[in-house]
Image 1 (cartoon, rainbow, N blue to C red):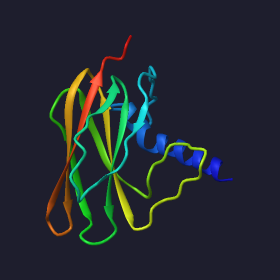
Image 2 (image 1 turned 90 degrees about the vertical axis):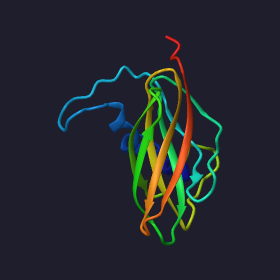
Image 3 (image 1 turned 120 degrees about the vertical axis):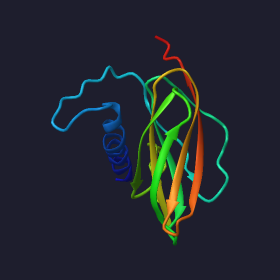
Image 4 (image 1 turned 180 degrees about the horizontal axis):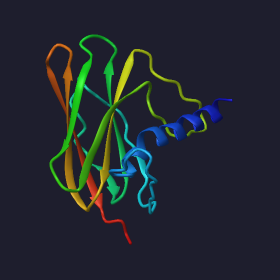
Length: 158
């Protein structure tokens, strides 16, 4: 019973979070065509209040990355977030809230974490190179937390 639920959660996550950024600037009601290059990649969550991992996330041109940021469900809560890239290798597309942690399909059932909220940073790899996606999260008390994600984009191999 838990395996189909996990599969449904993964498929829902793909269509809710990745599909809108695959279609760069599609307008409502427009058809979207994709050459299906790249893959959906989900990184391990980083904690908003701890130093970020500086190891680069590896991907290829066309990949869509979901970069989760976790935070405790206690004030001050995130009020807004801004994501930007310092290089042309990736494009930051959006930052959204998630009701739980995204998970890959596994043979073992996975459970959510109680007392933890998530922000998901959506980025797309557009050309080979290195870039850092900087996410600035403004908390309700006015403090700003910065979370960097290093990304290394390789050629797509075509």
